[in-house]
Image (cartoon, rainbow, N blue to C red; front, top):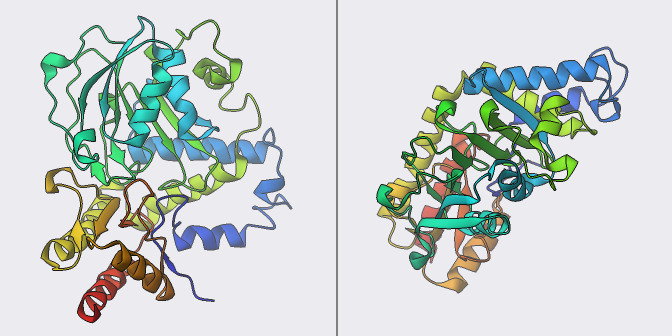
Amino acid sequence: MNRVYNFSAGPSVLPEAVLKRAQEEMLCYGDSGMSVMEMSHRSKVYESIINGAESLLREVMNIPDNYKVLFLQGGASSQFAMIPLNLMRKGKIDLVLTGQWAKKAKAEASRYGEVNVVASSEDKTFSYIPELDSSKFNPDADYFYICENNTIYGTKFHKLPETGNVPLISDLSSCILSEPIDVSKYGLIFAGAQKNMGPAGLTVVIVREDLLGYCKDFTPTMFKYSTHVENGSMFNTPPTYAIYICKLVLEWIKNDIGGLEKMKEINEKKAKMLYDFLDSSSMFKATVSPESRSLMNVPFVTGNEELDAKFVKEAAAAGLVNLKGHRSVGGMRASIYNAMPVEGVEKLIAFMADFEKNN
């Protein structure tokens, strides 16, 4: 059976080199005589894996020393509650509403304080990033929250809001490691791993030290960042295998790709090819306004639901799978994360051109 080109939004495609390496080490990691899956998280050999993953992440993302890196569980969705429980001190936050995940973050934060929606793109099914008027920002807010790349709608903040002394909190789940970022511009970054970092089950949090230690007194132990900082992400059994795969992915970005600048070049090339085709096509149309388009998630439609369904079915038969759009939007969506090779995008474009001719 040949491998397909997997355009899933997550869990998503992993680099083949990483899968092969994991396959080689499946039964025996190094000279440990066992699989990473079987290993005690307290063992010296596993300690070298988790520490290695952290130091690689720090190197690849250029994370300053005054930020803590945490390997957690509970998905990015747990962060919707963890963030207000740990960082909401005065009980007020600013938030930009750009999609379903920002909406869920807003609902959780609203349980602990007041959420000021600075701007929203809900009026046009979240198909753009709204203009921000800084006069609507609350200079007294505990933090300013954004979902930087919107997986479902295919939009991305190409310019960060200027929040002054208010810490910027960003959900980077679907664009982390896709390009270099300046970590020092953020108070806290979080990401579910299953798009660009590894398999499902791992959530990475990068948090500035001075924001720690203010959690609400009723915060469950497992929901305190301090719990995980003090225990090096080992308060309980961490998602050991997912962290190991994440380490392999980071090695792949560093050694095979050559770092995040190179990664960005490749991602821009893939996205440009696909958007250029969509913009010149008489059948297919991109749904996102050009200035808000994501490099990672590309939604598109034909305008005809039956034709959309036919396209998804025939694409899958041709080995181009998981192109159906999110149920809340319909149409199609190609997620072209780091591990999607250029040739996968070329194959998709060639298939779309053929489909257009024949229909």
